[in-house]
Image 1 (cartoon, rainbow, N blue to C red):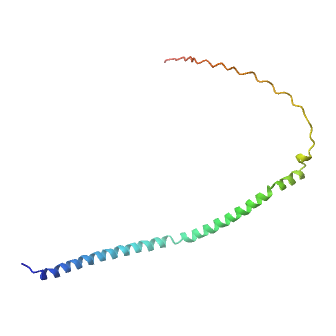
Image 2 (image 1 turned 120 degrees about the horizontal axis):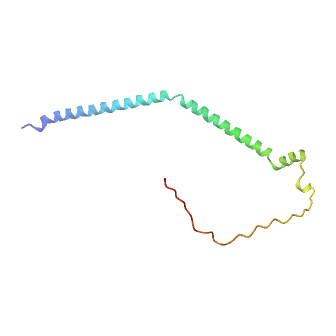
Image 3 (image 1 turned 180 degrees about the horizontal axis):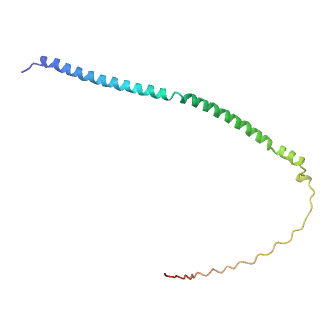
Length: 128
């Protein structure tokens, strides 16, 4: 029979080799992931300046939209429309001459019959 002292170094050596292999695998996996991430970052480095430029352009367009909205609101205000109408010869309703007119009576609509419509249906079928 072997004593526990002689088998312990063998087990320790096997465990050490197992843990070394695991540590090496994990290190290789982490190294591979780091390489993939660095490669992706290198290939997408042009995207971030483009995004910043698009954001700046969007904010400029929004500013222009707001300014144009104010211009449209001022140009279509009631006072401006009234001034334009008077300049083009239109007369405000309050100052327009008014004339009473008699309207003719509307023609009478014949009374609608309340009898129910016939419910029979005739169908002709031709066979070929």
